[in-house]
Amino acid sequence: MKTQDSSQAIDVYIKIVVLSVLIVASYLIAKPFLLLIIWAILVAVTLFPFYEKVLNLFKGKKKGLVTTLFVVALLAIIVTPTVNIASSVVDSSKEIISSFNAGTIEVSPPNQSVKSWPLIGEKIFTAWNNASIDIQGFIQKHPDEVKSSAGWFFDSFTGLIGSVFLSLIALIIAGIFMSSAKGGYKTGLAFAEKMMTGKGEEIMSMCINTIRSVVKGILLVAIIQAILAFIGFQMIGLSMAGILAIIVMIGAIIQIPVTLIVIPIIIFVFSFADTTPAIIFTIYIIIVSLLDNFLKPMLLAKGLETPMIVILIGAIGGMMFLGILGLFIGPVILAISHRLYTNWVNPDATI
Image 1 (cartoon, rainbow, N blue to C red):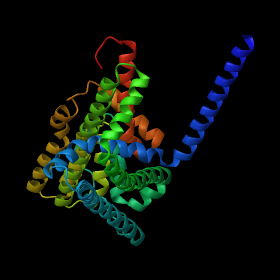
Image 2: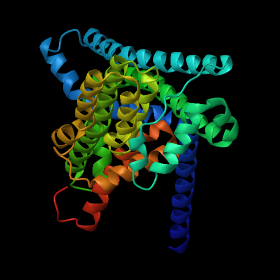
Image 3: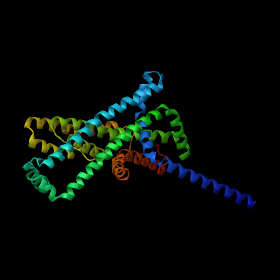
Image 4: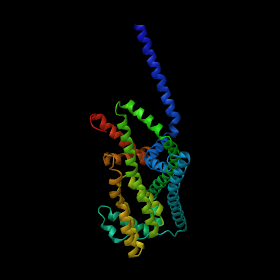
């Protein structure tokens, strides 16, 4: 009897070791593509309701062709504004570098009202005024600060462009996932049932609602604000429209009020533009900065009870851990983890 028990224990141990080796090996093999696959799943889950409506228009016929056209249309929608903003950033950077090398770069002097800003007004006014008098001398006097600021921005920009390129690939993969959504859902449901017996359907529903709500409520709102802000910056004649639009989008994603970002821009616009265009721009950009107050309750609140602090931590922590792509994935992962934890500590509650 003891020999049989010992033999069974050895068999179980060997199975655990073999299974562990297979899991680790599978992870290492899939690791280079893991973020891409996760991003593709998020995109597929978010876009599936729209894809299903398009598919129903054709009554389920020519599914492959419809899927291809759907993905191509989305690629075009993403590529067009991305190219415009990236082109603006590149042109602005070239203009700044060439002006600096030629000694013709200029910074408009600050408005006297800058001094009245609480806590930081005097320091900002002094630094801004010194830069407007002699920008080259200002850069030579503060080389470390200028290098770190410029380095942070261009690292963020290249990371963002890389994320957009990754998103394009993920969108193509998401098209494949959406075309076989039923099989994927069944697999996910079976896995959820293994995790929490009897609550697989609820877990799947919660995960889908969380992903769609976070992606629409955080990411889509940020993209809308960035595009509208870019249009305003272009119309008022700001040479760094693309750079400023990217800053608006990053700020909106990590939950920094966009109004705080655009106030210095408004002040700068009043320093060079005529009064009437500057007032029109101010009204427009303030409306854009406040859009999230109207859009988030409509997009984020539906089907989602995750506290905003969880979303904020997910965005900032995701960016620190995974770079720009983490801004998109972090809030979703943390929101799902929060809901699973809530259900774990209170199993009688509805997910």
